[in-house]
Image 1: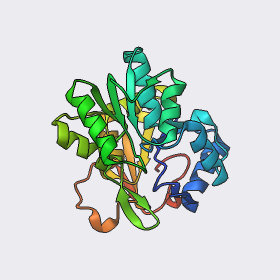
Image 2: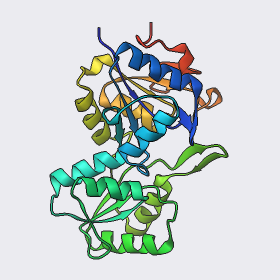
Image 3: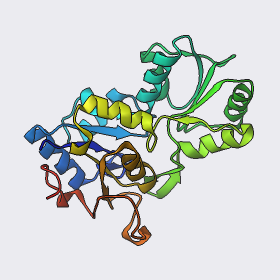
Length: 255
């Protein structure tokens, strides 16, 4: 049976901009043997091209066909469902470039949609603008709701922390495009082109990677190289396999 993989980036093949050697070696083995895979990441701060450049620098000779970001899924969704949308975007330049690449119009005034991602310069003024727009009827979209993500200094606030502030001020729950929700899994599985029973999600987070895989009807491999440690496990998590490192996994899949 053919096997394919959806692979998280942060905590699996890198932490910040430093490689995780076992993850890099695993991806290179997939490339060497022609195994289909996609990186799927909730991180919307970079464009697909920027992710490709970073991952190539870390030792993985991939191309744009190998990367799906929550920002890309957000841009595709808006372009397809609301082609006349005017979007107020909270996020890094990578998000803005991704939205613009799909023809999405960006604006600070009278938006029809508010998109929130990780923004290193998030401010009260941005929160106020977004809150006002959502209260006036703008569609509220989160690229993802990860409240934290791993860094060299430990867990730091993620996009979900920013999203939560606007949700608290508006009493509106956003549509989330990233893991664990359906949009990014549906988009990625369509791109991968394999039956769901042949696909494994490889991730380090139970709340996004593992729960999302379960809800998408695919199997999952929890790798304890990022956010989740063995001490955090209770035995009832919905993963199929748990390993300490991708050194323990063959490109052929679990045996």
